[in-house]
Length: 73
Image (cartoon, rainbow, N blue to C red; front, side, top):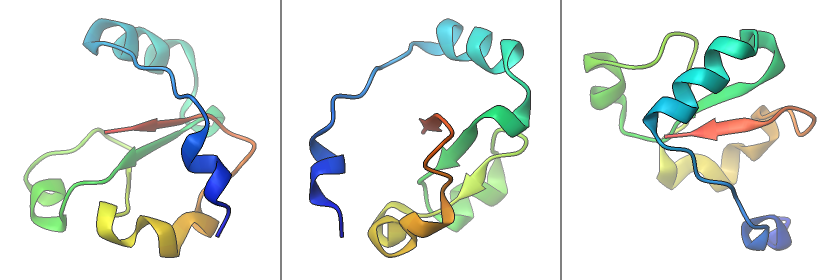
């Protein structure tokens, strides 16, 4: 595991900034990552979001494209 990636500063966006970012970038330019539980994802999620529950994230990092920005919620 690449531990240093967890110490890289991350930018936070509020709701309006996130909405604006998503509307200005086509879905294939970024990854929207939902780290909630499957039941929460089934109830409601951002269209196109990838579900990787937080407890499984470390084991599934290889599923994320390192060349794309990732919006995590």
